Length: 458
Image (cartoon, rainbow, N blue to C red):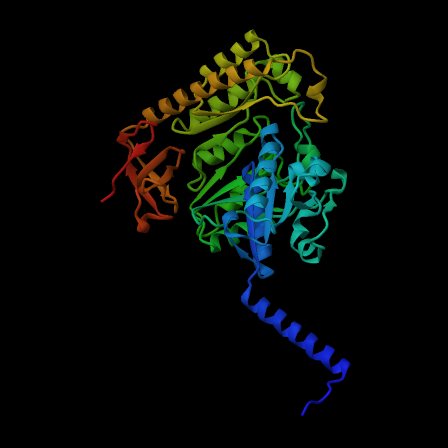
């Protein structure tokens, strides 16, 4: 015997089955998100904040090769290479996982939203004012169409606190964002907006969260951290004085700080504070006053020299790093040689060398004296060779000493773990799980072919 089922009831049964299948699928499938970060420590801290937001929304963080549902690329715009890397990463991700939803944020997204959106596979591009609402926008997006939401950089006025996580050993704490300097070669003010920061109290809360996550070392980072607290009538020195009282954090490092903002008071404080490491990174960019003026830098070589010597007078063991740009317009062979000789005349420990790259909407584009690419590359190679010699010399000066080392969690392909002394000397040791995130006094005796110290602990 057969009974006719009314059409309305049949539709209702079918819809119910589809709904139940949907619920079942949702229970079985946890949404996955992957991240790829280009550029500076500041970007890494912000990526970690985005990752925590996705985690709170129910996403599991995975690697790019683990078929994520969403891939977030946090971009950099310092050089043309950074732009090319973004394109290559998107292409690789889409080739491996054609269904992945690619969202791009960061400096390149703010500066070149149209060209980023045009990359095959990119579904969402968010600017500096929109990126911290990424989770909500991804959840609400129609995944069949592309979204480009990049506002005017002049409207970016809010400071979003961030700190990196994932590596319990070291945390990058964002204390400042944006810049008011407008150097001739730099796009950062166009990508991140005007200088801004949170208050000391708000920054301390972020540091306490990092400590609760198990961090032993915090690196203070930002675009121009010496400008911290200007709007609140607070200073970086006052922040550092308060940070040293947070329980659990045994080490702080001040990342890149402009020489004109590195005061005698800050140097004096670091020389006496037990938790602030004798390690400074001071951008130089050029050792020629002629080029510094063309770059619109706010110091000259005499000030830079005075800062380096002030540090070494109080802390002879301090590590000092410097950024240098080769091939800036107008840099003749003679002016480049001025840079070389200036660097060699100072107790600098290492260099970060960048080849000048033309960037849209910078004043350097209007300057004469373009340096051929081949010459730029040759100068970069020479300075990197000098950097290697400076680092080896600095390491050799400390051979035979015993210094405290914070060992990191990662194990390399050769079964080694690494750590850094208080003054940023790299030390390697056979991997031992119990050494992770531990500070141990280590004798600096044996060096490998790279000049790094090797130890075998009992």
